[in-house]
Image (cartoon, rainbow, N blue to C red; front, side):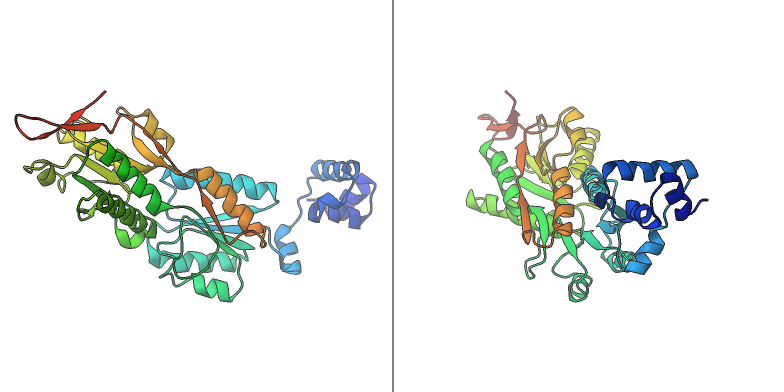
Length: 341
């Protein structure tokens, strides 16, 4: 391995200029920078960024905490964050919590030991989190992604989960559905899911209907059809289910098929997130779309620009699909059926 002086000699520049090519390349003329980089490549020189960080007390690494990477929402968000950070000269240190609040403190402590310059965090519950207040007191820059704290003015980028779910529920109501339930994974693991349930309740109450109790699923991505069967087979049957995320809705589509329930002819199913794979299914999944790539890029921009607004509200929209349809009432039996146009 060659040293920096050898690179400087080969490039015909001073050692200070060669060092600047790796620490502050924007300060060099393009021709000079090119000569230094070519010499570095020829000699196999690699700068020690870790040692530089320790000397300068600076870092070019950002920490990212996500619930999971199995959900395409977070994977797409992470890809956008990596691209945006790379453009600004930063790399990412990524950790996942598997939706377990108790893992958040351990993962954040690990990031702090790695001397990250700032963090983008998605926590289980922003208001009850035990890690955010200490970070703020220590003046560690962080931005919340998806979380919307109700009690603190922490910087965040998000969609309006409550409004989005209210609009999705209202769309089902406009199709004639009155007997609608919402299904979600463990609610204590996601303040976003709780906001979405409030939105469902808002729409049902505004239409004059009584919101039903949340249908608890074993996880955020796996459904069980057994809790729905009594509702579907009741004299006044369930006609629509709206899920807290798309993976849960996709799992529910499969569970319905295995139970012999036709979607949307007997049951309409709607998701939330708008992941691309939902459009490839048959029936295609209707969903609320949130722009995960824009959310990721915006989170990095906010983190690297302290003067940026305290929050960034992104647009959402409804993506129609074959998994939902209108309802009509049979005049002979009184049962609910689905009418597809």
